[in-house]
Length: 221
Image (cartoon, rainbow, N blue to C red):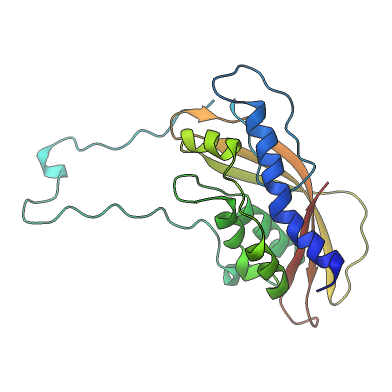
């Protein structure tokens, strides 16, 4: 892999943590105000604001409980919210790049050990070399920012708007996409973080026109 490609790959994980650090440092609970988050590098970032959690269902009568002879079901793990690669058109660069960003930034502190868990859920859309670089990168999402999210059992909700800047036309084997990404952390306790907005660039490649697109770099500016 070229030095340039390796640098771009490492930027995805490394920069995400920096952005995350800037966000939470900007809003240590229960501080009332905070400076704008630092998003010059790429790592999942967040910051706090307000929402109400969904109420937990409770049985209203004895009939709502399982029969005494039936063992109580084990609590089911939270389902993965990463769409399967086969569920989108992998020959559509817009669809692939959007799926990668949505997956990488949809974080759940109740089930993820750090941000790398979310990043690696996008593995099905990444080139083998890029995926290897991400796996070899340093651990992310375990600093003060992650601690702040985890205290609220927070999950993040990403949303995307296509960028309008001019870019090089797609070729049969290379495409670039720009997105305006907004990430909002939402706590299970009613806490809602201030949305973090950033511009993200995604580079995609494939071997031939009929092959599926694979992401080879994600960078933040």
